[in-house]
Length: 421
Image (cartoon, rainbow, N blue to C red):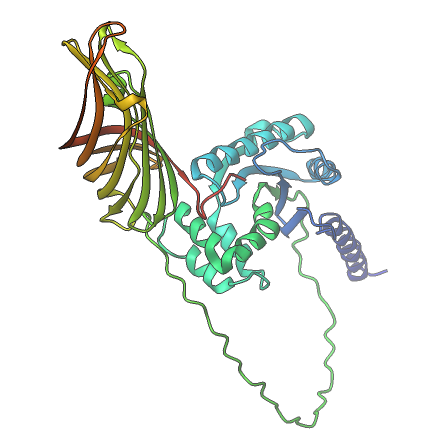
């Protein structure tokens, strides 16, 4: 047997071994992340994670990967291992960054305990919300509803949180449902990259016999052009950060608490520029002595008009007022609504200003006041225990009917951002 034939035989055996190795590292038919060999020196493995989770189950794929790593360590040399944690794009960005980091650290711990890879060649990092990966997944899936509009939103200059809001609104939520089901689970992974240096490499060129085949001339066939069908593209406008979302607000007025009045306010956005507000106050205590009291139960529903369409900043209101009272100012007389069932009634107008006091805009401060006209119908008593009723009066008064310096919390109740992943 000649030298050339022996060399060809060795090369053939080497090729068969390479094919067997690559087949062992190829993609299986299951919907999981297998080991992927990109070229002869780089191997990638993806470990999936559950929603909002940084722990994983030791699957058969992970066991096979550990065997692959140990086999490479016996036959070749692993020069570097990169472990990168990744999170999907849904949920708060800060939460996803921490989640991706914990996923990378979890797989690093497993690799140190379950393989023979030296710890000094392992590098750990995280990418948090991997928008480039998300874009590549979108590009590769033609079944995504409104695919072109999804790509347009991804490539916009909006913040990640605002991009997520826009994606949730595409196609009345159908696009987001598809992304949640088919794409986002593929982003909840840790990526492991092995850089391998081979110990034995055949560098001599292989001399192969070249066979020249006779060209066969085929008769020309007529070319049939397929008609071009233009598909209309839905225009998507990326909305600014302060877009309007319907919210429910819970508030309490600080000055009233200084007067020992229990109070709560409730407000719901009706539409852009408009909201409905309902403050309620209650006081049942005396001030140090039975001769000083400002007991009341009042509520003051009203409609507010906001200058901005986000229902923030300056507002004007029209309100109605009703209340029961029992007042005494350490003087000779005490005043109480007639027979305890004739509340004061009236209404007025007001104005104020609301501003956020937290980064996410949920906590807020509100400053405002109003004036109104009210009809009083009350009894007059001697200001002492069981004091005698000495009169009954009716009058109409005009003046300040509310002053508020309140702190509150907003809860979105419309289409909005959700949880983590």
